[in-house]
Image (cartoon, rainbow over all chains, first blue to last red; front, side, top):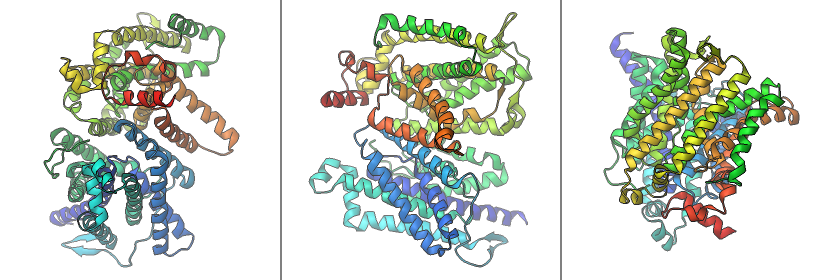
Length: 293
Length: 340
């Protein structure tokens, strides 16, 4: 393989990875905008979604059915956690809430370890056929599924926030909780909705990437961290920014792993996180307006 | 700040600590107590940072690890005298905290949590990937025992008395600190940074000092840990350990004096208890239940007793010592008083 196609290959890998990070970042940004909570258990939704779908598929269910059931189950899980833990502690400080979501992530990881053990699982690709070759670099059909899901989610969230009554209600509730409540918008219901959606979105992301990555009980943590990096690059209040941030991170990571050292690829992601936090905590791409926390 | 009976509590604790090795010859019990003591040192620093300065750190396992690796590298690779290496283990994390603290502590709650989390992960990756210096995933073995002159801390009992002595000195120092002007200024920062600033407190400098102080203590604990275990690998310094330190600080009660010891003892004891009890109740169960319980306890505690267990004793006393402001602890205090 010559150098240009090698670089192209790294770009394709980066785009696939980046789309995954973008999806997780999207879920984080949506929850953060609606509830003001940075959900550290988001990565666990991804893991549990993937593992559930894999187990359901192994029982002989068609892939589509396994997908739908797993997404619904993890959405329910997100809703249950919101009602039991987040809603109960609604009045607590941001610090307390972040420790609560951290506790939830540890709890879910333990649960995943209990049910699925430490083995590695995988899922067959969604569509048949070998990789596509562009300029000497291969790109698998599953990558296109992942791109498609990211685009669809981005479009869906954009349409939700800009075009629907509920979307506008969410934006209103974020801007001014009291005023929104006076207008008949229930922030508690919005918070539940956010966790249902982030559960579903996380699970969907997990299932889409299950054919390309090794799925283990503990993969969620690092995926969650990459999601934060994506969200922070974009600015925590910017949905489009999370996607760009995710893709940027994926490409940077792929190139640094390919050209420098694969053992250090996680380190590059974290260096980017710390760098962005220190230099521009409002995000590179995010809007410049003040954020309240 | 005082516990139930100020006059009898500390002499009691000290006496209890000193006679334990005389009434037991169980090395298991002693080793548990030593580990609790080492964690207490870390949590005392973290308690100042979180409970008094109101800043969170999800990266303190990194300072703990830097201390341990400093000792390991200096003694095994450079044959540095052990006391000197321990000094390095205290200083290096302090210097690093000073370097990263100033920009990092400007960040608000969530961003600070993310930045310290990132720092912890980065240092952990450094331990795992730095093959030549740190031995990579297999770590460094053959660390000598700590020795002062010709006296070698080569048994659990000797080490126990060393840790107990350090803890007693440290506790006295911290008690003095939090009852001094500095302690009052730190509490003011926790309650309201703006109000503290208005009152003429240099909040940035104090937060940084609290951060450096907590890093020095974590480094000290790390160095002692290396001398006690005589072998280190990256795993005790992972993100999980950082979370465990935060849990200890929170369980024991932030902003309380006995909190760190209580928190470290409870979390370690709970871990040991679960390790023993779960296989008895559920045969063939492995470590996964421990993780589940760990997460559950963390969540339940933050929901129902966010001030931690150390706060149970001071619940009726503290209202007069409170500074005006809108900090989170005031909010809980108000809620609790309303509920009683």
